[in-house]
Image (tube, rainbow, N blue to C red):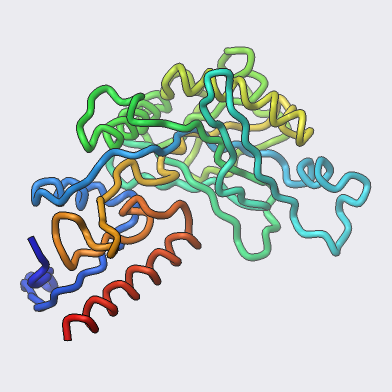
Length: 299
């Protein structure tokens, strides 16, 4: 019921450090660690997260949508955005991790899966802008009430995308206009996808749940009313984006320690207490202060 030591393997040798404080900052895709914690009876619970696709527009089109006649002025940065809407059922759809002048990246952490993410280099001078367009998922959407049901929900999508796109780590892509018309794309328009490994035309309906596709089809025209380039039929949707946040939470008490293992401080996105780089860093500071405070009190 409490931390006594931590051990790890280095150069085939097990090394043990005696300690009564461990900050567990594993990241939200450390699935092997989650399953290990489950076998050790560390208290966890399922939580909300989101899934969807990456959408790409030409950065110049986004700049014109946001800046109008001042688009292209050297004093203006590459335009970005944040958008959100709720569908008729109250489900949230929103953009996340918007990357001006960026690229869509390959982010699979397991074999025979496809996962996308996005990033911008410092200059933000790439041809395309990209962002995740995500649909909120709750434990009510899972097939069962197992703690790991959210992870299996993600895996099912990631494996379906891998298979649908040719089982060679290409990513499934679809043009927005074709997606809204429920047809498979055949050629690109004025946007060329930046995913580095290759792409295959596959509609999201082949790897995302129906309710997720319905929510995306509801949201995209709503977003187009706010930012005109979202109305472009040539915008490219690359999927799937499944790793926006952790599908499980490692439960902790008011001291930030695990409720089942004293001295274990679940921290950041992997613990289910942050939703991005900055909030994870802040949570790290909080956990460090809690551990130092506990150590001070014990001495």
